Length: 318
Image (cartoon, rainbow, N blue to C red; front, side):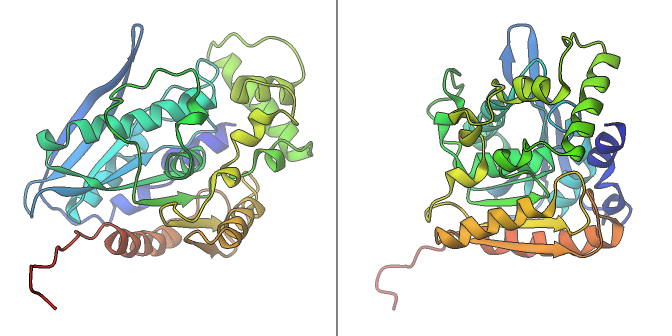
């Protein structure tokens, strides 16, 4: 588990070494949600030059749903601000304190919060993209493709705002929990590592089969055939009206197998939704410096295409 978490946290660091120094303003530790005494925060970088309002990119960290923080994308949002985007990196509640439906609710709330504060920070609420890696890739997909029914029972903050986004960038996120929870040596080893990590960090985890414990902790059920498992699978929320998706996935990924990305693209194609899968050959979970340079440039092209300002035609124009 330690290997998985460190990859998820450090995955973007090579890019920071090549960032061009440009001016932007940072707004750190903005509280977008309170749950009792717990404050859930985000950091925001906004260009100091350029035409307002700025398109927004919301970045979501990975960490197997149990670890990680908004600091993972701190350098990345600075780079995006240098490219002319407002960019946020968010925290969200982690298992075992918050299961996946609750995490999805947090992610959706972060977008509604930023839209509610659009005038304050010079953000265009109608030009928003979401980007994430690993568990964060999953949350980016669920934010972009699912409606609020997956957060049933959660009282939404900023209900006057929509969590709808215009583009999704997915780095090696899981997409099919039926496939993900199938018994395998990889799943059993990963589940054991997750439980060991939680116990070492002081979390109270009962005794029992690690896979069963992880299912209960993450999905709120131990029944793989439960409708809830299907609800939490990205592939079951796709329709032609969804925003465009670009997915990057290493062909040697042993943490989130590349079959998850291929399944996503297959369903996008079948349902006539917009999507592109970019396979990164001979690379595992987290990619590498060279691959990140390539995917960063492709991400910028994708954002430019899908977050371009809408130009209204003047009356009488051809």
